[in-house]
Length: 161
Image: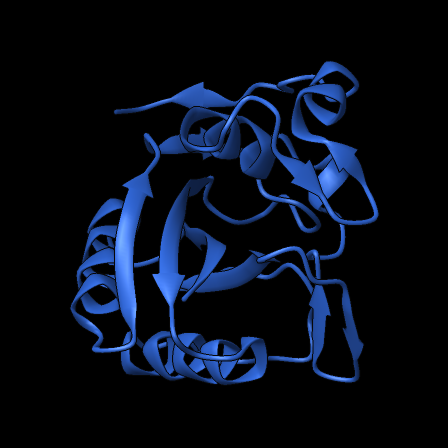
């Protein structure tokens, strides 16, 4: 079994409920076990500002899947919850599931980059991750989580629950 961290985000169709539903589907999957789940956080959207604020969380799991297969399962869950993929980057969405960290691996493939791109600059990822990760978590290629947090302002991030 490998440890992985998944970022969950939503800003359409009852975002908190979208995240709770996705959490349940992930936890019930035969190849995944939930280890920890962060609080929910509200944040302003990246990119176009003419969309609702996001609700985000981070989930730690153990999985028997390899990284690319885990990504495919996460994309299937997004689709089941009404995710429509558009060419517009950072647009509104019912559900966004990102594979943030997978074991101690660095992966550079056309359809999968781990650690997730932008992880080090995104307060809506780092702060919930800090809640559930070991204090000395080393993110491959990026360094210690606590160092990344020290360089990342919370930028209006609001803890919801």
